[in-house]
Each structure stands twice: as C-alpha cells, then as structure tokens.
Length: 123
Image (tube, rainbow, N blue to C red):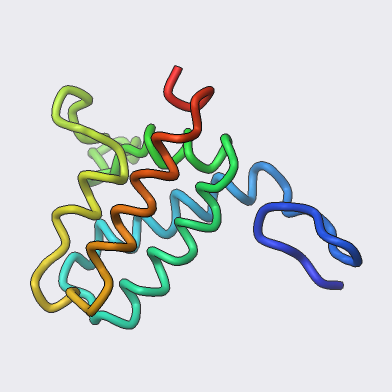
C-alpha cells in the first residue's frame, strides 16, 4: 500500500488528518530537542515540513506549534509561554551553526512564503 504524505494521487491513499498533524508536531519536536543536529537531519526535517505545510492543516499545525518543556510532578506536560512563541518558524530560524548547509536559507524562505500564501491558515 503506497501512501502519499499529503495529497491523494493515482494509486495512493491520503494520509489521515491526525497523522499529518502528528508528523508536523513530531518533526518540530526533533528540531526543538536537537538544535545542533547535523545538516543531513536538518535538511530532511525541512523537506518533510515543507511537504506537510503545503496544505492548510499542516500549515496551521506548524504555526500553532508549542514545544513541551518538561513534565511536572503530576505528569502533566507544561508548555512554553504563548507570548514568546511564534510557532515552528521561530524554531527553525534559531537553528545552530552546525546545522547550516548550502541552500538552508532559501529553503526556509520558501517555507515562509508557502505559509504566507496560504490565506485561510493565517485567519
């Protein structure tokens, strides 16, 4: 069974909505947990995010991302304060120097443009 990440194509089934949201959140969790990752992993993360953010649901999940900082004594997760959170874009802009690879800034610009062009997502 062949599955496409986002859109339905001939001979493939569409990925479930919950799975799309989990993919975006999971990739951003990797970026948040490992800001000094190697450039190959960063490239893969940005490519997957660009693909998933090409639809409104993925873009909205990306923009509403809040990293979980730690667990309190009761086991409930605590989130970053919302006033200093700009979603996944700020997270990608804060990548460490070892992550840089040729074309990184262009890929981030393309992702930002993709998010800005998605009108219903920004409303």
